[in-house]
Image (tube, rainbow over the protein chains, first blue to last red):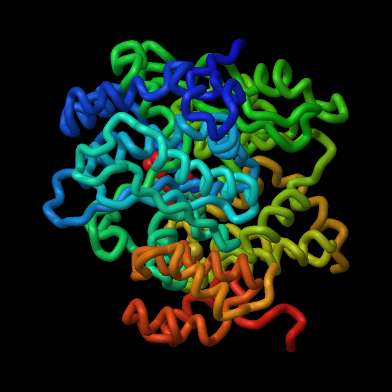
Length: 419
Length: 75
Ligand SMILES: Cc1cc2nc3c(=O)[nH]c(=O)nc-3n(C[C@H](O)[C@H](O)[C@H](O)COP(=O)(O)O)c2cc1C
Ligand code: SF4
């Protein structure tokens, strides 16, 4: 299994603020191509490429752009989502730091294609150096002569605000992100209306993940047809797999979808498990994805294959847990995190996450009962089906899958409980 | 971190150009990062400039972990 670095290949080849270095290495070919064919053809090309969102939900990017472009309301907004708050996910930072001009080029193309007046990049507040770099980058970009300058009447085509996130996981969710840019409390919202219809300040807005955006210049410079030759037919392109947990070597690896298996990723890139023991479980798509058991590690690295195995590729944050760990402890760790992050807007998630956390803690301390397991299932399922946003719909998935896959771990802690 | 001062705050306002709802959140973030908190006079001043109510801005800021309305340790 080999990496194919169509997005990360340029990483570190030029000084981050050096626009000339970027240009010399083939930069801005995508933007020039976009300007030559016009917004509608850009959207067509992205649709043809089969690109889907890399922020976790996998929505087709071209279709999203088209929805916003068709709206009559002005101005429109484009937002690059660099909150990257999901557990086990640290790929966007690689692009933001290693090849910032690629991401900026993608933002310019996206804004041009949908006709956005103003764009934003919302960066995780913990990435302090990255925020500083991007503030300088925008200044450089305004000074530099970029393709596209002057076409909208203004001297520079770069109308980008860098926003530093303020420490809440929920601001990664697109509606919550939009609320925060409106100086409101960050909460999930019922959809529809979708942000493409009524987004920031009630205007059509496209929110895309950093990795999605990095694909844009690449697609436009190589052409959708060539791009489609990469990865699987249903999921063209590459994914930045973030490998973490009980592996010898953490890291971000850019692989074509379907090009290998979870086992190969863990063994060839991660150096195997920390202890050398077998793999007990994997979360293949970040901290809110369902567990796969160690028996599923021969699963191919595509969303389709991983779904068939019972989970989803999500953010491609692959978290490995080795044998010898108890699922109860693992789930407790996850709920400790998500329990702090519910925005509190809707009852199922606000109350459910606390109740589930209490039950898991009881179990963990050997004080749980068999009914507790039933309650966990009930509350978890209710949360998934009636929560307002993706947070409440997803955080119970690892808990529910752990109960399915590792019942013996839960039974073991109950057996200890005094009758 | 700097001690809050009107001159420094004025300079920040000048740097940002026109303050409106479109850049308010980012601006308040810069105020937070510069002074370690968002002083009450800033809430009132930015409310006046953007036409939002001070309570709306106050309510929003208190919901974020990384915004403070008082200097840490200032009781
Ligand atoms: C609780 C929650 C947190 C999220 N966090 C992020 C995030 O940090 N970064 C991101 O790009 N998308 C995140 N998303 C997904 C966004 O809502 C949105 O779908 C995505 O940014 C769209 O971009 P894409 O179409 O390019 O994937 C999150 C979703 C949920 C429900
Ligand atoms: S599901 Fe959770 S995070 Fe989403 S709106 Fe409801 S309370 Fe907020």
